[in-house]
Length: 333
Image (cartoon, rainbow, N blue to C red; front, side):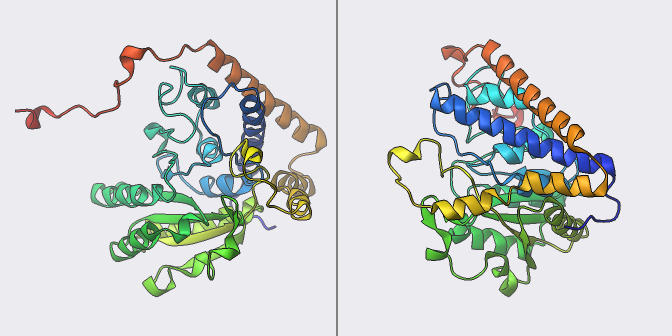
């Protein structure tokens, strides 16, 4: 694991804080789901924290992301408020989308979060649309498009990648390859290397260790610089692993499909432990300061749960509020 030039200690510590926030938030969600406190399905990101944080650490505040059904980590890495996210997951008015979006439909335009998405590959054309608008607005923004290895086999990937290449859109396509599409091994349904799929279109790609947050950040920084320079899209494929199932509660119908030895090997490759060890080696943090960061992350999650619990469910008469955009006056006549 190397550190790029200009990576100050404050940035490194902030990256670890974000990774801890994601881990503790997701662990709490797992417990709450088992207690029946969260309506609908949730898809947890535990084990993949380095991918989201490494990507978002290379983005600016005004840059955008599109996410997936497994998107809590992406949102937290981009700076989303965990209290409002928790309220959203519980279907409360204090939520990011007033309790109407839930886990798979969280949007926060103020942070450049174009939304988690329950449709596999659904964020790809949204990312291209946002990037196309940014070109015409001359905003200088870049959009990171998160998707999984399963979504790489959707037709919309080729369609979006093709247009992004033709129009030189400022998009970085980030494939988080965790080895499984739902309950099927990726190698059983995915040929070749996802990062190489842009080569015929002139789109560069790179595979990186998705559990090495600094390696991800470095690869992303290069792709972001290319996009901002007007050179078009790139693909980054982060190799990682989800510790939990495709969705919480899958044990009731999915059976055991991942070898225990495989799971143990990936858990031993914990991205948070790896980064913590690196920061100790660098003299940035010691054991006590890392433990303090962890305690603080847990406290923030506790506060988020308290906030969500005090927030009321949305009223029935507000069911259609904010669902449709208002018609501009110029078009209403």
